[in-house]
Image (cartoon, rainbow, N blue to C red):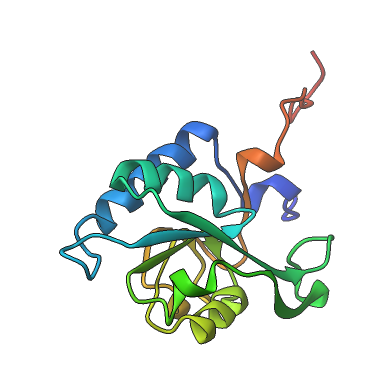
Length: 173
């Protein structure tokens, strides 16, 4: 048996059911933690990955004000170190609503290197940053998360996947 890893062996595959369960678990962890009698003034999703978890959390916590911030920090090739670039904001949430972030819950699917959340924290220092999944490098940037994964694990989210036939590991059918 070879020591060579197949591409999927350090992958963490997330189904729609799993992201829903984990997002609800994040909502339960955040319930009552907002500064206004435990409530949050608004939720801001970091596009694109934070949109599905933010929708679920907004429903669970009965938060009706939802906005987005679009931050880009990767080239289209993914998140490999040689493809990273400095994070920049492409679209900001409502300025009047945001202020310094007090009472705002900012949601993303994953904190990896922490560069995206580092930029968001500079913009909104009093916001609460929450992610469903966290890698060790990015953990210091997030206030609340549900599941930690190793830095070298690639997470396959359901919105990035399609069902298709996979050859058996050994032999042919």
